[in-house]
Image (tube, rainbow, N blue to C red; front, side, top):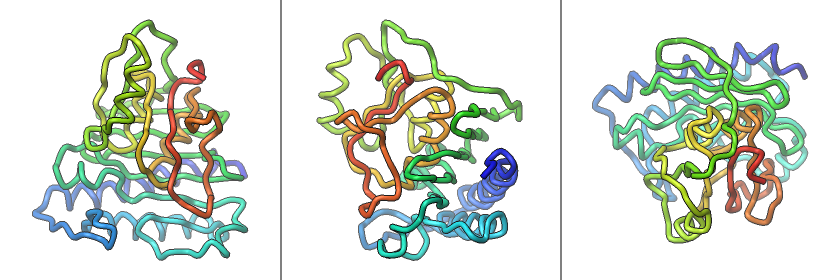
Length: 255
């Protein structure tokens, strides 16, 4: 499949979902909680509906896995060679706390690899996209689009860390890096900050799900970065267990 031919449609779809999300973000929205005690709002559901319907129009034969969609059994998923993986809103806590650092995420997975990704940050008016092997781009808040690339190695590493999930194990890893400074970011923007060259490494020694990381992972790959487990293996998608192992995201030079 020539992903560059459908990428503009996917970007437009993410923008449409972002408009719905932003409208709710700027309203007096209510927060509910799912069975796992994670928050959900009308924005998560509205974005899911827009993206799901839009992807069906783009590619009716490619299955879709969404955080807010129906649970699909492994017996069905294990035969998927190619599928859409979406997180209608990553960083719902950032959404409910009104930090602005939440994202809309759409990824294409092929043979376990995120080969195309689109990430929008509606409140920040930023968007990122990339295709593995074809490069990555960013649209800034002025509407200007430019190519992005991971930064060259530095003596002092810029470590991007989660504001909501910085645990002791992650702190211990960061302490092994030597001279460093911390860059704060929420949601999948942590990958994007590395992809655009504003940070160097993101260690995640805590739970994430495949839909949390896939779209931004694709963008980082397209920008010259990598994501590996702590065992030095590539982070892969389409597993029976949708939880990710601990991982490190960084410019390709780090590995």
